[in-house]
Image 1 (cartoon, rainbow, N blue to C red):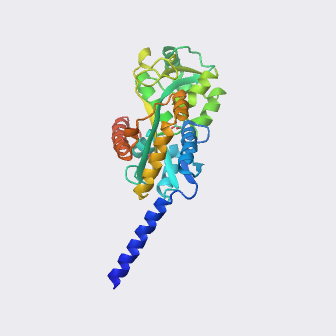
Image 2 (spheres, rainbow, N blue to C red):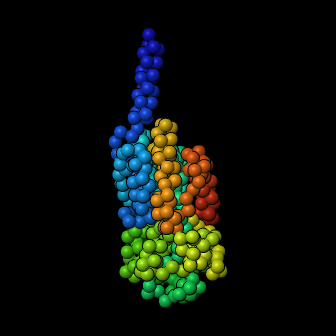
Amino acid sequence: MLRRTVLAGLTTGLAAGRASAQAYPSKPISIVVPFAAGGPTDLMARIVGERMAKELGQQFIIDNTTGAAGTIAVGKAARAAPDGYTVSIGHVGTHAANGTIYKNLNYNLLTDLEPIVRLPQNPLLVVSSEQVPAKTLKELVDHLKANGDKVPGGTAGLGSASHLGALAFFGATGTKFQLVPYRGTGPAMQDLVANQIQVMIDQSANSLPQVRAGKIKAFAVTSKARNAAAPEIPTAAEAGYPMDVSIWHGLWAPKGTPPEIIARLNAAAIATLQDPDIRRRMEDLGQDLPTAAEMAPAAFAAFHKQEYARWEKILVAANVKVE
Ligand code: MLT
């Protein structure tokens, strides 16, 4: 008798779960964005969220939860109900490097979040305010060699993309600049345009529009090849400082989110990145789009794990950590 009741309860629970997955989504979905509005991750969330809403028939609400290079936002998303109504957006910094840099995270980036989909990746640009006395990367490096510790540079915190970019830049050029932390490179860009800070190694999606508007200077791109959206900007390697850093983004859900819901979100994201208007917008910002195969949840999970291990090696060797 007891056994029959338990089984009945289980079947009802499973049926309810299956029913809610079939009815998903029945209300707006929140995207927890780990950086300030106006920056590249926020822009990615808005472009993708707006178009996925058309696929799923429910709005995506942008929840900018900033601070500590995204670790607060990711923790919030990891602890959310696994019902498909909270997703976490982030990148190589927030969802890989931070697992090595921050020793006391109260979540595990590889096991407490379900990979939904890999999103586009963009290179970083070496940029400065108009006032910096340099026209080439070599001149900028010489300027930093002479004045580095006095030159304020913007980042979005230890472990952010702009910080990982700065680390790679320091390694490739043998220079340094001050690391001034912001809640995102959106607000940092305002200060760069105003010459409150003077350099930044920032995602092309955030810097290119300002470069095109003539408000800041670009010296190099950190990818191996020039970027199709800005073929006039040389690679750092062309100037004698080989670098190969690109910033990939992704979407995750709290652990335990039903696979049917992950599949719905994944399909909506793939349709989004197959939309010609979205592709044009992303490519215009210097973004490289993943293939549909690379966007499959299992392929993204494998890529995420591999990137986690790759950055762990780099950061442990560089002894970059926050106790
Ligand atoms: C942002 O959206 O502000 C960036 O992704 C921050 C960063 O990681 O540099």
